[in-house]
Length: 288
Image (cartoon, rainbow, N blue to C red; front, side):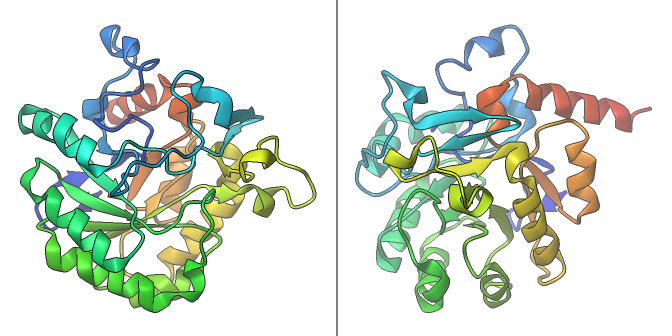
């Protein structure tokens, strides 16, 4: 369980993008709510990452799976930072959260520390539980591992502007232990992103190589992401959110590695009913 400074507690998270920009799910997921196979209220939900301006990325809504391939026990996606931009979200989604029963954390990605601060300030008026600062996107070229000062200044700008607790999202292809130590008293939790294709399959060409290769998530990413999880738990006092759930038993495995909360990501895409089923089963097991 993670308790944020605003009092919000959560044990299960719907990772960024798994339930669209409002927590209600992508259009193919929403019918599952009507028959009880998807219950967003069971999770603290991170929105798909927003940028200040609209970003085309690789996701085409008329063909949403064109930037996704299913693997044996996982997913590779090269969706990138496709999103309609912060202005759209503030007009179409943010106001509707006022009466929403959902617990929402807004994910943001910026081109500069100042821009991150400005975005965070604009989000203050909405009913959010926190902000997740996406410092890592496997399908976007970046060199953040060598830009510690950029990371620190971005976090400072967001904290100065925002009224909300801050979570930072990192990836295995960054100097995550060094970063985690530097930001230990600046952020309230760390989440873990998908793993770049070339880190998991260095000798194989990605089926999405024409879109940059993509990031691996789910069971196929567990070896890499759980190694990162274990190392972070032993390296920082900041609570870590454990990723890559695929089977129900993964919840116990992630908790045993020291994660204080568990996130569901690509399993929502492949089996959108599983996270709800797993959380209900977990909660039921605690009452026995």
